Image 1 (cartoon, one colour):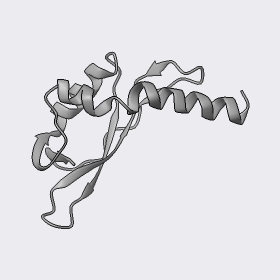
Image 2 (cartoon, rainbow, N blue to C red):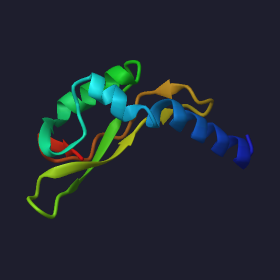
Image 3 (cartoon, rainbow, N blue to C red):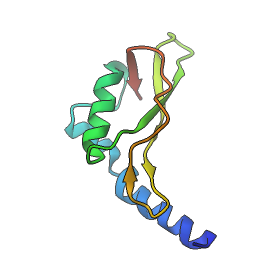
Length: 101
């Protein structure tokens, strides 16, 4: 697959998963909020449910205000032919509690 079709496919996948992620997480009880914390395992379970049972990974960064971690990135994995698969990389958050800003 050439570069242009590859990037077109990634944009298509983002449209299917990324653009509706807030709404899907909201339906799972995870609401974007700069103050509330959630258990990382609850967020990972919600993401797995949204992702048809496939695991994802979450990357966090430390808040400069109060040292509570917040989600910076959510990663979904696909095979080379763009089928969903479990994410091999584990989440990179240290706390049991994180924010979804």
